Image (cartoon, rainbow, N blue to C red; front, side, top):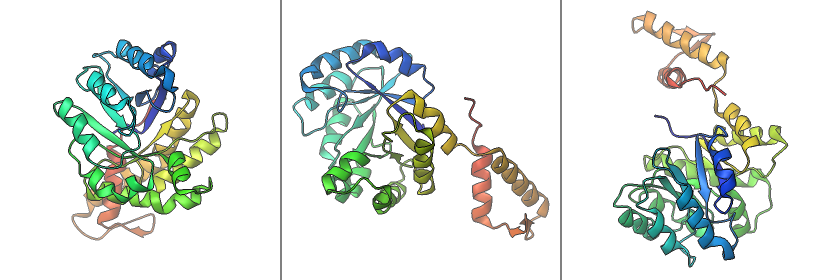
Length: 270
């Protein structure tokens, strides 16, 4: 099964939205105990999430970071719950907090660390290679604040590329890009997702169901690309090992591998 490309956050203190989030069409839903929940509601939100989890349809949970007073209780309550598909760890900066989750979950759960700070980025290799890590996520908004950067996507290209490279070297799934704050400007959301995809990201975090279709479009192969892949693989199969060209371009191994990857990707039914 391919890794999810769309992750939809739902506030952990809004249980009336859990059902809608489950049915919104996201590849994965993240019950959020961190940014979406005020400090006074952290315990109530955890209880609501625990009540809303279902072993028959496991969901991801973003717990509070290791730097907070709620981390230990979040991990203790959720690590062994059969309704948890994976733990999303915010403000990830080292392997120690990941080891705590792994120990309490008896290595059952995968962890998706969010890189949101200079310290976390500086320790990419350590975070990537920690046991139980599934894939990285990039918390672009908090990262910009931590580094004192302006909210211009161009300035994040080098950091996005670094996260993609570190993930590849560690053998992880392609990382997940951060949220887009636009809810009604879906062209902007799709453009953000396409930019991240070009840089090697494999998915995107979403804050509203409206954003899902735009993200899915950005990460889907077009019918023209499926047709191209089919023609490439057919030409290679008929060549008997000889050099072959498709659409006036030589077909070498990287082209064949890309064509095979496209052909192997199921079409998404929205």
